[in-house]
Image (cartoon, rainbow, N blue to C red):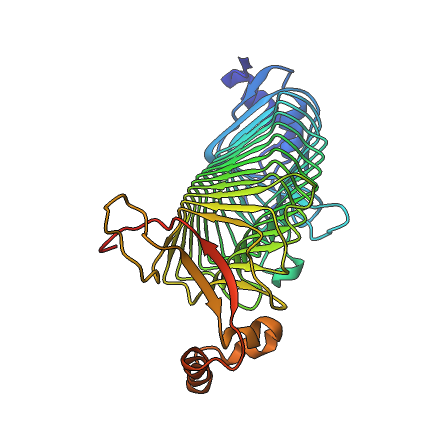
Length: 413
């Protein structure tokens, strides 16, 4: 790429941004659009430090480097930067002051092209962060993204993919936004991002074969939620602190053939929530080698469904290991080789597996599983007394929730 020389930069500055006379009233910031318009395709634009006025439209492949010293402020009008080309690059910019219109998706950066790079920028006081529509093979890397100081429901999304494929969303620092959403989009990689203080840290809708790895989601209402999304891989993420009435680590709604492996799902109201998943016939969702710990409910089923595989997971310190709303059990799922901290058996032959199966029964817990509002009383002295009496002399046959024929045994853990 060809960089604008110093003389050319000064000439553009003199032409479009003349100095105000001494004593004159402060003027609006110079327009950044004129700098962009003066930059030929394939060239590098590295403007002097300062505050510039947006909005800006980029219609040819140029590379813009702000070095952390360039601010573009849209003044509350529209999107700060709109990328309407392929192969452009934005880095080291501070973008702020978008509009507040949800209909026009006012954002820090709107991308409407392929092969673009948005990296190492600070996006603040913008309704949406980075919005991609019908845009493929873009890279959104290492940006710091914050929405506007609005109520949660009317904030914008930090990163929004709509009908966009093969994009990379890597290493972004996101907080105080509404969601990160992936709609009608496939084959994207969402890796090593940090999301906190938001609603959905990651929300899939009608999206296939996406990969979610090594992200950190803390203190959001929901960690990852999949709706009508198949073939997603969720690996080695840390999801913590999704609490409250709607809190959950990973949630499913009619989603199939999903792999959930090696994740830590800790201190959530519900660790994993499943509603009619898997949905497609002859498919399964696989939960392998996850830590599911210190949640209100480790795994919560919306109904007595079937088809999930739980193998090699660690269940530690959950108030309730597994629950099925409306009663019934989770016996039509495969449970094998999981470690249960409330297992009361032995491993006399030392093969690392319990000598007897792990079986989980619901006694008084059947009350709140069948009547969800009764969960308010879980842990109360009265409820604990009822549960003790039901275990001592059951009022009715207890409900078997699940059976793990080969529980993993780890003495002292």
